[in-house]
Length: 213
Ligand code: HEC
Image (tube, rainbow, N blue to C red; front, side):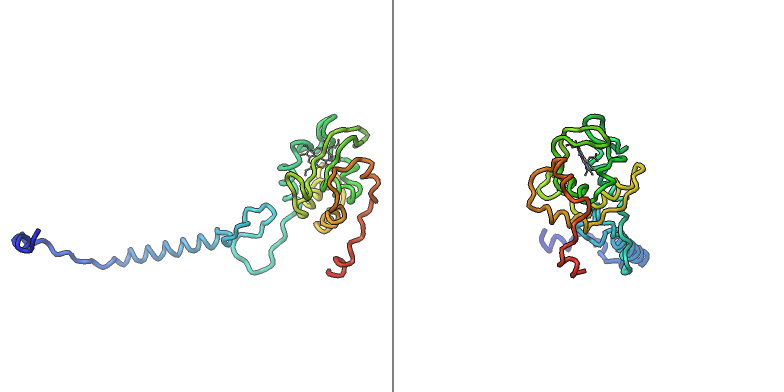
């Protein structure tokens, strides 16, 4: 419309900008404060690894020392996810197919052999609690379909050595790392004979590691 026409229109009510009411500003501030506090508490510090099952250090941001996660709790979770389908939650395995871990001499005995089993698996006949099995135990170390980290293997082993009535001492992450290093060139699963040929005791840690600690 042109200026003449508009001047002929009856006076329209003037548009005015009313100031934002104080209560609305107040509510906005409260909302912003709440949203900020919410993010602060529940964002996990915006870290990408908060869903890593091994990392239970997030939560309200704290500057003090964080309690280390209980390996038995993590070990049980990892056992359920990776081992229970064969060895069962009861640790009793399945007669003739999957050997038991409960009261197994391989689980409660030599740490050296037990850690070696986890890194590279087993193939062929093996006697467990007087029964013969002839199957395959998958590897969980380097090159395995589902490689586990040293701290995950140590948590699982600590769990199976102290569950179902088993009473053997825990396995440390350093011990798992040591056997990962000493068996690095290995590509094949173990036979029972090879496992029994390993010294029962863990090898001494390399001098560099001992000096570094
Ligand atoms: C796909 C099935 C399967 C899965 C999964 C599996 N195992 Fe085994 N495991 C076996 C079989 C089969 C044997 C016996 C190997 C043989 O007969 O040569 C065995 C043997 C063992 C042994 C030595 C014998 C004994 O019973 O003490 C240990 C220890 C062991 N497994 C621990 C584990 C742990 C820990 C996990 C999880 C990280 C796991 N296994 C996952 C099938 C499995």
